[in-house]
Image (tube, rainbow, N blue to C red; front, side, top):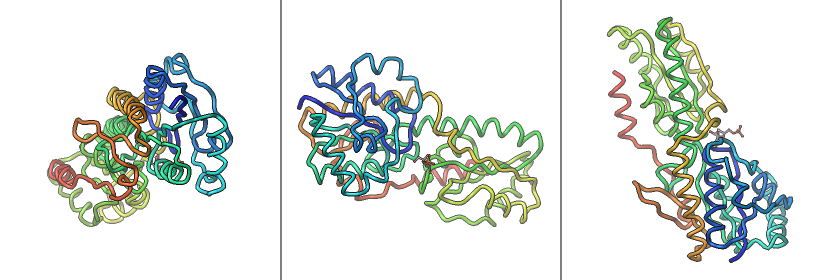
Length: 320
Ligand code: F6P
């Protein structure tokens, strides 16, 4: 193998640049030529590919977003789109790809591998943390810290006005961001799609809190569990409390990656190169406990990643 391509795909995640940097520099260290594909799979289809050198990734480790740009390519979902992508890969003389992205991107990569046998090494990067085979995905830690930072600020107003705030966070169909940020931010209730909830019980907790002297309450709702507007409407109707909403939106995905995300991205990106070197053809790098492992891509999609139910219960207990 002489020439490898690297791309970022799907929603940007803080730490993607650190992963690109690791892939490029570790690749160069092993004697590869490294090409950057712009705009994810869309750029692969269009042949938007350029050589990268050690200097191309200077001064990016601290930057959010992705210097390679990213996209959610509808065309890559079609066999024709993937054929065009394959043609670009051949034209560019690429022998293997490193794909940095979330669940949808990894599935796309696996399909591409099965159809073309071009080796694909995947680095899980999404703020949602919804990929099995790894405890953490690149970007999750930064997003959780962004949410906690927002909760801290919201608390100032919540306390001063003795209000209830419902904060809606991202996560698509999963509640990993909501649970981690809710626990770290001391939320009164955390509503996630993985666990059925009863708004009557949420209101009972709020009323109990007020009786024991709480000046405010913060409720976190994962976007996959419902909308802040609906939840706030119900709470107001059932309790009469002054209830405000904050939808954090894309602010969660932005900003400089935390040190944790930079380290995770660096070790995962570098390991992807090691795996290509070792002859792996379709695998994802993952962190289990404190150990870096890798899994065949087919296995990654076999099981849905589960929420830590004990952590969820603990967050409830600590919020009494
Ligand atoms: O997958 C990351 C994510 O931020 C999800 O949490 C969210 O549902 C989605 O992307 C939003 O996508 P977009 O930025 O394309 O609107």
